[in-house]
Image (cartoon, rainbow, N blue to C red):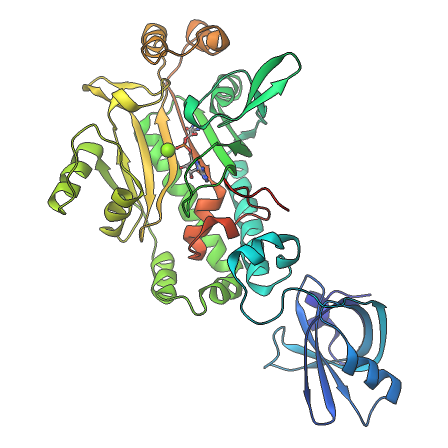
Length: 435
Ligand code: 4AD
Ligand code: MG
């Protein structure tokens, strides 16, 4: 048996394949069956005058997504999707599929999400998840090449990392525990052990927001580096993103084009990615507020940016932009205060271009024990579950920084898809945990 993706090496030879019937079309005395095996799509041509009646009749009656075994001759055809076509000689029905619910006509998004387990077979979803595979492998390659050690954080945790409002509480025997919002607190000790570390794991956020950028479960990649300051942290994020974008353009050009089909502005988007280079823009929070005010958006220094504000900022730039040094009053307890201006912290959000908004959040960590204790107290966080974290500042404290990047938001930006629910195989949303 051979896979469709290998057929180019079998031109002029007889092969046998198994797959699902993707689509079917007839023209006079010929039946065209599009066969899908997960690695590609192959046009199988059944000619009335060249095969027996029974085989031809079977080809004529095939249902969408039925599983078949086909044998035939592989022929080169530059117009065909994989560059080859099959002149079919025999056909066996292995499993039928009656009334497959997802037909080539348009379906509504709720209909499709409820059938996500089947929707994965459609060409657009297929392209997207192949891009996801390449992207995630490339992230691992980037950090692997640079000597980072992969350290897996726990998913069940005794405390919050990113604030109590988005915590999922779970029953833990006779106690309560929380699903992890971020692996960061566990990466910091790992950085003291290994210097350069990262994790890639699910993070959970009980986000009450129904937007195109929020999932309740997403895949979170988080590097953490010893003896790295905020500027070095931004440079790492910049190099990483450039590496990943270039690789996707190289390895998945067909998928990216398919995803951009019928999407307005997708050609400009691809050009923008092709021309992507460093440095990305850098803008302080204070200057960002001025910029928003100049654009007619009323907001005070100290207020948080919403999706609209982020979209306005990122539309001003043709490259991603680092917005750095946000107000300390609303920052997480672990971010390091800026010596030059104690009202702000040494952090950044990276806003992707074209209105996609934040895809990375990072910071230099507070390494001063007393300042960290004060921040925990100021934010009224329970001290006891964080004692272990304070140990890092007791036993050889060190300058260190890191960031978190969401796989789904990043993939949405690179592929140009509007909503992140399509960028993960099984999206978890405020109103959906099925299938
Ligand atoms: O900005 P966030 O909340 O930062 C942290 O969790 C830090 N502890 C990371 C660190 O420094 N190690 O989340 C980081 C990124 C966001 O920029 C976004 O890409 C993604 O995680 N993210 C989400 N993606 C999808 N749905 C959500 N609800 C998300 N929340 C955050
Ligand atoms: Mg953030």
